[in-house]
Image (cartoon, rainbow, N blue to C red; front, side, top):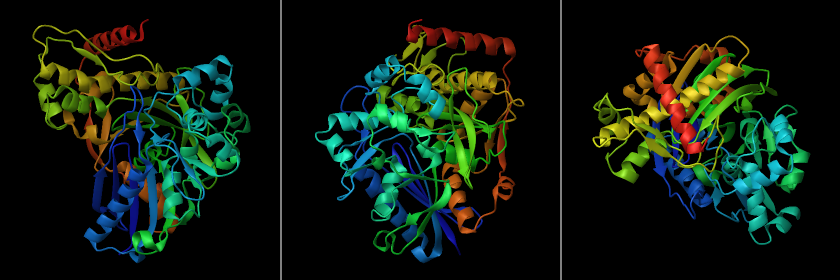
Length: 494
């Protein structure tokens, strides 16, 4: 049997999944790694943890399934986006911890660039806003802060990459310094219309062009692994940032189709076809995927805290022992209480883009307890999705949004998905295949290898597990959303 190996390098763990020639997952391995918080608002990973966990899970799933390198037609990689790594071209050693997408340390740099009048140019070229979320200002911080980093970069001794680039460089023994268009589009340095790195933006960020990887299609030849790592050479044939990989895995190939992934954060992408739509509501314009040299664009809304709110219930408050307990606890909340949580633990993402505001809890009474906190945490995800939904509907000038497909860990909770449908006032479709991010990466590699079908054939394999339809009446929905908006205004300080 022929297999495709999907590597899913995420924010808190790394996974490897083996898919067979029918795109069915046959085995998986997962390993968590340490999170580092040097200061408030700072989030880092040790790049060596990203590398060693990747090797470990790939080797483990291959051993458990009795699969050798010769059985694998290709590797697909999907990764946490925007997380920034800089390493020595000669030794391969990182010069600093990876700065994670959640990290907010570059807020002052963003303010300086905004004051210098650069935001309009950045938005026009990259589709992004000046926010610490993206890689470019993280890279500038490293070059400005690590001793001798800028001189070494200008001498050609340092390389920059998002996590996919770093892993590919390591897997190929330094032979390939590459990325794909979806990851490049999240760096703040890539012109998504011209399909190349922006000399202007690299200039005012002070980034030498020689540090940057070559940008390829999502399905392309990214290099071949060295035999010593996985027991033989394997071609790397597919790469996409995690949210784009989920969009692909959900088969959102038609304009107007939208997916929302609920992991640590929540990320919604709306396919806008071959047209990059400029948002009037502070959504991001990005590349959904790029095949055969042709980009397909999307509007994206990013929520920083989704599943992390449930982790806060577990680790911060200690009111649940596992994430799975949150839905049952929320179901028992007092219906007469309207507790609202705005989980701005690391600021607010789209459509507000307020990196420095912090969270708040509203509507507490003497009888508010764990159940009300759990319901507020889960509903905060639905409210934030409603914010994105409203902004995208205002921006999208095509037909009405035709599909909302959900995935990610929180989508397994029926209570949460029903709450989402109620607060959106729209149907929510959950697929049978929940591993959509890994599946998207696997399909890219398998399609490139000639093992999997083309887009149309792949789209036909998508299957519905359950559709959630609204049960809340419009008056209640409107009143609930109005309470949410007032709470958001309070934490922003409006």
